[in-house]
Amino acid sequence: MCTLRLGRYFAFIFICFAIVHSIALGSSYDVQPTVGCVLSNYVAVQYSTYFFYPVLIGFLPIAIASTFSILAYHNVRRIVRRQLPIVRRKLDKQITAMVLMRVIIFVCSVSPFDAYRIYSINFPTSQSMPMAYAIGRLIQTVFAFINSMNSVISFYIFLIFSSRFRRQVKLVLVKRCWQRWKYWCCHTNNRIEADNNTEPRNSQMESEENV
Image 1 (cartoon, rainbow, N blue to C red):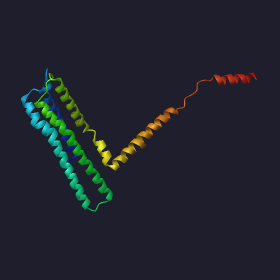
Image 2: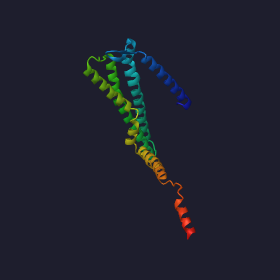
Image 3: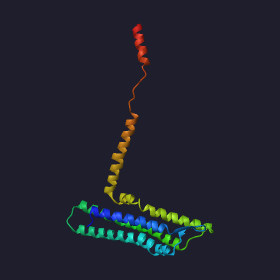
Image 4: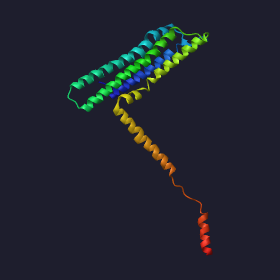
């Protein structure tokens, strides 16, 4: 239903929305000596608590990913009933398993970070309590790290659940990258250099002339 041209328009619109939204929300933060960088605007606090973290970052991406994973599952069930080659069925099952695991990991990685951000916005910890402030920063750092892993973990999920993807990775890493690196190293080590030392040859010619 979506063409490449329409997809580019949507991508441009979403990028512009993300830039404007980040600037507007970032301007609502204020640096306080005892707490740190927090939302000082009441409207921004309510917006982040009830829409930005729970809906725009949390529920909406999870709902979209879950919807498409369910559609992929029903598509595989419908394909199984049809007279299709076994290889096609196996590939469709692998894709469905990859999508389902991707959604599960997405929910597990995003939900803790969103929940803690909502809590920290409404109940900021003062720096006058060093232990509580350090624990809060540590928890936020751990959840932020888990949330950032959501962007790079797809490769490992596909590597675990897809035998075809494993063969492709092996082909690229072993038969292409490794062979090129090996050829480059061997070619560098076996390079022939010209010998500019002509003294032994000249001395030999002089000895022959004397004889």
